[in-house]
Length: 214
Ligand SMILES: Nc1nc2c(ncn2[C@@H]2O[C@H](COP(=O)(O)OP(=O)(O)O)[C@@H](O)[C@H]2O)c(=O)[nH]1
Ligand SMILES: [Mg+2]
Image (tube, rainbow, N blue to C red; front, side, top):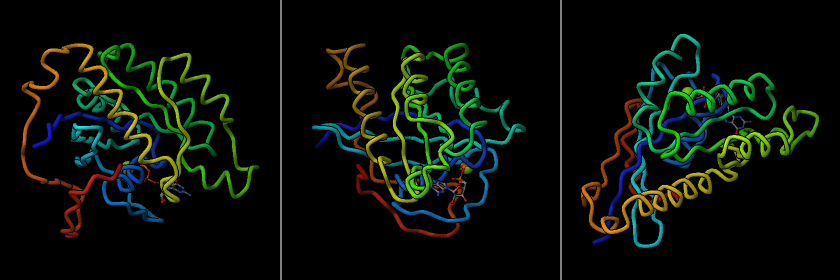
């Protein structure tokens, strides 16, 4: 039986950058053109195999609206990974992403956290380069400055989405192994539970997706 390790991941970023769409792509391999805004936060899970280990993502998808910002610490304080998302066509969302990363460094246990910066809606930019408002170099520079990983994605066209989650899983395993090498094959975090997927946002779509999306 393979080892299962759970990782808590929080999504942060301005409203409408595509946080929920990235999660939907990863968890269900779907995309919705007019996705309704997240209220508060949604919880979803998905599994991903890395070598002999199954990483079970427990994903908190937060609402981007300012009125929910004060709730964010509740979600990121005990997270082992954070996905900070901006929209490649919206300069304001990049500024907001920078603020979120700074807040993680100041308020969360960021040394133990895998922080991933994502520039989403790459499809819009590939269609029309004029739409691009943040260069790839600027994204890379911010990530380097803040010690995070970086990728440009499209939830719509499924570009790099699974790669982001796979990389997070790999880095998480490296960190847990480095922190506790002896226990890494036999720790309390291991479990052999079923393939349950909880989707508090679900609208009666009972489809269970227990397959690894990576
Ligand atoms: N073209 C394009 N639109 C996207 C992409 N990701 C999300 N969207 C759209 O952007 C809007 C906001 O997406 P949503 O996932 O709700 O953003 P959130 O508020 O950050 O969770 C929706 O209309 C999505 O269909 C993408 O990669 N490309
Ligand atoms: Mg959302």
